[in-house]
Each structure stands twice: as C-alpha cells, then as structure tokens.
Length: 99
Image (cartoon, rainbow, N blue to C red; front, side, top):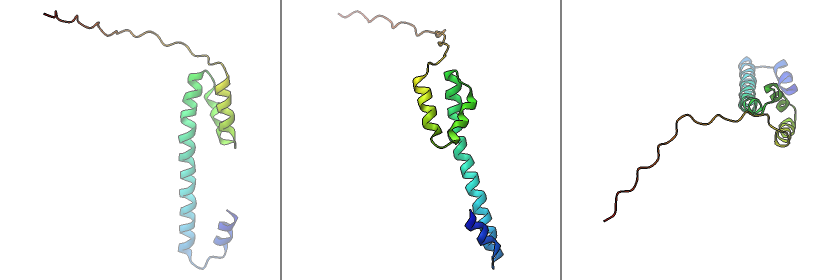
C-alpha cells in the first residue's frame, strides 16, 4: 500500500493514478465479498448450534476460523430436536397374486 501512495505522489500521467485507484477499489470489493462468503454461513451454523452469530467475527482474526472450528467440534450443541413429519408416506400396495 505504501508503494501505491508513493506512486500516486509523483505521477506524470493522471490516467495511471485513476487506474491505480480503480484497482484499489476493486480489491476492497473482492475482499468484502470473500468475507461475506465466509461469515454468513458460519453465522447460520453458529445459530443452529445454539451460539451467538456474532462469534463469526472471530473469523476475521488470523487463525480465528481454526479456533472457531475447534469450539464447534468439541462443545455441546444446544439443539432442539426436529418435530416428526406430519405427512407420512402411505404403505406400499400388496403384490398381486401369483398364479
């Protein structure tokens, strides 16, 4: 990042500065999309496991994902059992008589 700031200070071509700033914006957008791809599923997993979804912010810290996976793997999940299905498949009809 310091090279970008140094490059933008002494710039003979203004179009290069615009291109460099566009690349910075695109990289920031890609980073935010990657964070969303990781954080949103972890939030749903933590919510289903009975934890606070805010624990997903641990993923931003280096090695935080590994720590969170160990917490999930070795903790007791406070999950309510699923209710039995209301609709059940009817039994198969009997086989026709064999002659």
